[in-house]
Length: 395
Image (tube, rainbow, N blue to C red; front, side, top):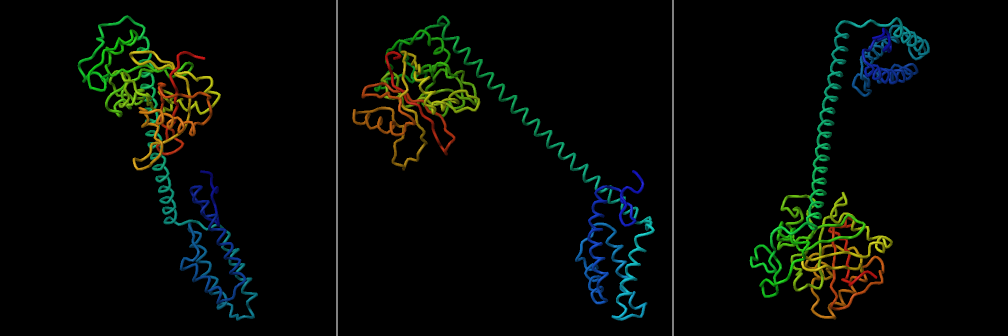
């Protein structure tokens, strides 16, 4: 260290932090010195008591030096034999004392040196400890972020490959045979109102996929989007929220049909659910339909059940939420069957009033409807919904 680099009031300080504290002490001492020069004996005694009792905080040994100065100053009037008339000369004596204190520099004793060394070492230990703790925390945070990124990338890659393979499987020659009827109700949900399986031919392109998983109910696709997925259905609406067609855990889940919908009957309204994934997977970009321009460019939705193909045209786009059972309000997720024309028209009026824009498309009692639903984070338990009706062909 350069000799004399951290010197204040004749004292040498070993670290920059000690030096800065000494400078703060010097500012306080200089102010109090000016106060002492213009004070009388009574005021000086009060200042000395205040310093001694800790009214003024000092961070270095400069405070102790100043206290000694005050002790010497308090005896000057007595030695000079002066009263109030001698105050002026007493003030001159104080100034001389201050000048004497400033030079020559006071040499530190061995005890003071050891004290300063101990303080400097303690400060260095504290800094090193803080540095190490910060380094460990940053390392743990880095590992956690890297692990999450790797896990996220793995699942995302796995999901993309899996659905590519499933899409390719649709085009392959059928492996094995799919019977028109499925007597084992444990392996299928395709039953009529009487609980008996109905004979219905599975489309050729879905036989391989159905061999892979009996819970397959159809396929959903929207041109020029990432939505191109198999659709599952089971008696538990929770299962496919975190499982894929291969029955594996998958945080992306699957697109699945509401358990109360029936493709054989069929239900008035097929309701399909999917996660609003930040990656855009599943229904992550469904809320793009909030833009009327986007809605016009993607107004047709292809949804095939495993028994028949279907083309749907978008009618309504709206935001809603999941309501409590006690709330008396239109709940789109409970609209599966309309038992009368009046009931159907009432549902249409509710959704039309909620729609973000007018598509010009309407439906009549007897039309087949399709509803796509995902989470909407604009409110608690929010949902973003797209409703379409089945049409023969694109207009």
